[in-house]
Image (cartoon, rainbow, N blue to C red):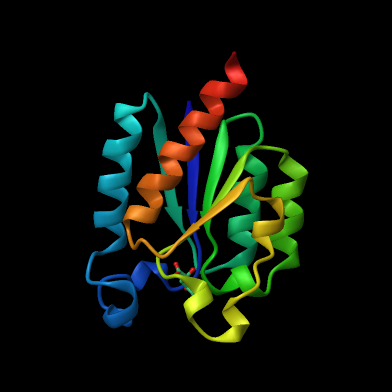
Length: 147
Ligand code: DQA
């Protein structure tokens, strides 16, 4: 199965961006580890990043008919974007939300999530490992829905 992994704004700067919060791994490092985990579970990742809300929405629409599920780290759009939530609801694919940081340890404005309302579950606080856990969770879901 193909899993679409979407990364939102500023995640292209991972590795140099607030390393005390997000660590020093780059997004490419995160992609490589997640892709290896996916391969072991018989899944393939289509791993993307955009700083633009509309581009993320277009990619969610395109996932309909091509991807089996979506993993999304919407960055700060997590806390603002009803449009992303609506797009996720519209495509009717299983969604898992991920965050590098534990958003509940942070500022109150990070404690809410719009995509979370469309997600089966949320994994936050494990750095790049959050993506590996999300891949495992989604692979499990897809396997369970096949039987
Ligand atoms: C983030 C958490 C968001 O609050 C923040 O805006 C990000 C990254 C995370 O992965 O921890 O850009 O989604």
